[in-house]
Length: 403
View 1: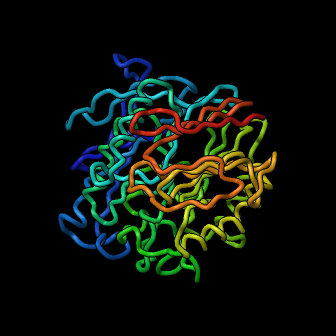
View 2: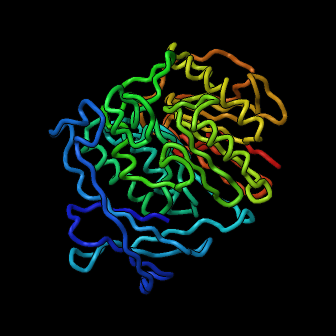
View 3: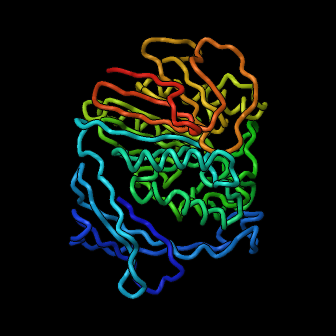
């Protein structure tokens, strides 16, 4: 478990005290400190100092807590004796096997309240939920803060999610508004070749990160080290194997990412994790009207990744980017089939909602354009997915899968 916090000083070694009771924090770990500056990023506004551009982010401290007991609640605080200690928070570690049920929350395209109109209502509902039930982790599938080079928005966003992220692992994936850039590729933390990373002759890959090229994100969030930092990685949560991949990097068959995806899917132990959930930011399916560039990327995702996911029996394919919700049948190549993949578009967490029209298609079972979030509850034989509107926390759609 990574525990992170931010201060205005790097003078002292960051520390975490933790234990099984808030009155007995008997364990202790030291951590590491990092930061970044305007010149570390790729281009544009992110390279410029100023109130509406880059400001000093302070120092990010991270402590790795190892050898934790599964399904156990720990209490912790961070800081040091000289500068003081945080309040005591708690988290419950994930199960050690696939025999216990887990609960996850998932969404994409959140942003910062009040800049993004739906962020507050969604955050209010999610905060209430994570403090009332045992949520194992949260999946935020790209377009995280929408800072786009305005560094103060990263600070405010991290404060916004603290009531969640101090209590459950906040697992993030890369989106176009964190990564996309045209120049400065030598500073790209993903190691993608070329000045602007993946820029094929199709699609609408632009400069949507404001020049950040994911530098703030990789300093502020953490992931397992089995892939390429936050860009692609995987982890197990009880009976579920979760994969994050990047739609902002080359996902075609010869690419490094494709090979990693295939190897990861091939290595899944279905006796341990019978469910596979894959997540990538840009949508693989939608029946909404869309731009030519979006359509081209969607078709390429279907061409290269849908067959791979079907071959390795992916159960649930989550994506965002469009600011709406849409759920498919179990499907493959536009057809509903019994052993297909259920695709769900969940980009409705906070950013301005889509207002585009829909085209009737066989595979689309439910869609709407409302601010919302979703939950996933899974045990070894049963997975239940629920879609809640943020304004009233009522269920708007739900479905179940069984093994």
